[in-house]
Length: 210
Image 1 (cartoon, rainbow, N blue to C red):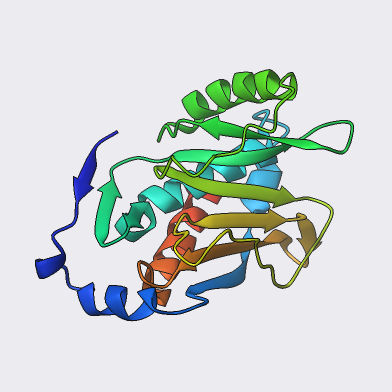
Image 2 (image 1 turned 180 degrees about the vertical axis):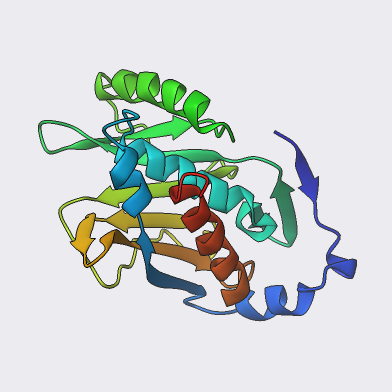
């Protein structure tokens, strides 16, 4: 992982950064529907886990957009070349734990490592939540019980700039399957254009190379 400090004096979105930093509620969330027909078609023949495949596709989307890998503390903005993916892992008891996955562009390699990590996390007794000291991370959560239309997240404070991505129940549609996906971001770092780029890259990864 490489961290590079952004040169604010020459940063094209310096004014936007300073403007939205002053907001009491600088975060916004956008929900869209993504086609997962290809994933559902191949899941049995290729042994694909929809859960782990979605985590990897979200990782592809986040790493395709530099702004989603930027974090700030005070007036210092840092861009990371790679971030961890922290996803909630449900337990049979109804509780959950947080898992941290190192992103690998190779889906098969990521899937193998994620499978092992999930089993390890299920045996943990602690929640394993980020205590606020780690910035090079993105938060993920799956809601497989709900085909929702919008979503909002709990946020600790206005300067929390870690993106949060959620996705819902996979449901049939006329010509295949789709699902809701939401990304919540800090407007000081991310505009609608970057959100669109994220969804485009994530959708492409979910199409399994098509």
